[in-house]
Length: 236
Image (cartoon, rainbow, N blue to C red; front, side, top):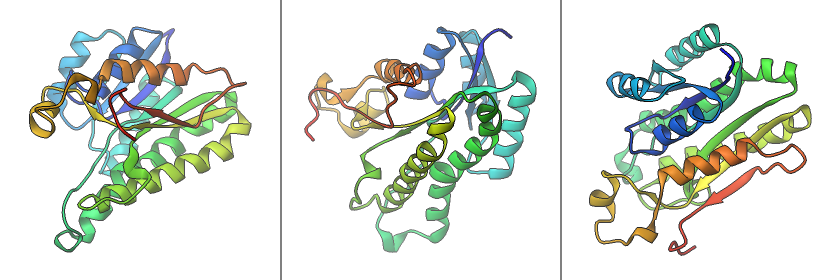
């Protein structure tokens, strides 16, 4: 193929972060295996972006996820980069939610990261080279009313990523956790969640993708683990 392989989850609509990451990486030396639930959207992106291949899969279904990753590795070869961008955030009062809801949040946010890593790492370790990126947010830092299940699973995700960074960093594998502390600017987000907010309140998917790429390209003499991205108008 001649291009390095990037496996990317959470590739949603063209205006979103996942699609922008796919577009940016596919234009800058990578072939991107795009994973998401919606086949029609993935096929549309595959037609628009060179150097991409669509792999429809719900990462909450661990059996299907394993089969999909096996197919990617068979079709496209060894992964140089894995980016876990697929999120699930079940919202609501704790007493109104079920343990099944909690388990599904963990499957998408945390268990899927484990499966992706376990299947990509052996070849990375053979080469002493590779990068695993997780896109997260401030839910991993604190609990919040109405977001308990999301926060719990994202906190576990961050700690798993940090454990992998400490275990595999000395073996040549870069693991990084990128916290996006903002609402992301999409046609869906603005009217639903912040219709009256100015532009400086939102994070741009295009610029998030560029920053993810920069982290992947860091020299091993100056690796980051925790990277925070927020628009200049965000208070923190």
